[in-house]
Length: 250
Image (cartoon, rainbow, N blue to C red; front, side, top):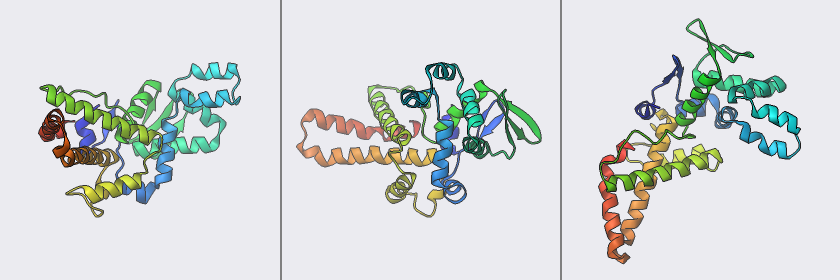
């Protein structure tokens, strides 16, 4: 995963198929937040999601065993064949994130038309595309990653930032954070971002800014409590402040 492209907001190529990050403006004005969440939920569906249905008696044990053998893509193809509304949402998700007009679901995979050339998305390519989309929308792990801390202080900060990022991603997956709330927070507390220019950001860029605000807020709270801390606690706070130089690398 090319994190620089995630930060820049560039499309990412998967087997010569471009996966596009959505801007906040596109989500609000063209797609709608509810529809955006539905498209992500469809793509993020996996076999584990169906375990609860199995427990509720929706699937027989034989059917569940059959489902368990399917790839993520074949699972979505099967569900599309059973429910036309599901199929419509699935096709729309492919159209939105790949910015293509023609999408056909076949037994072999998904066929899209890119520059008048038909391309087949099989299970392997789909998994890579799904991984990319989840990361672009701050719902996945960027494999934490290429940056190697130069010293223990840097390692300590990297661990803290990764934990904060995991919490954000977990809340996103659980729908604990509304996109509009995060937009409001970032526009209010960021120095260079406001409600006029924030709409140009991609979802990934928005949450990266939100993450920095959380880290700054924690540091600010520690500074406020500094006079009441023991020496060990004060030392940890001073070391945390050193981290400004590597924030852009995380």
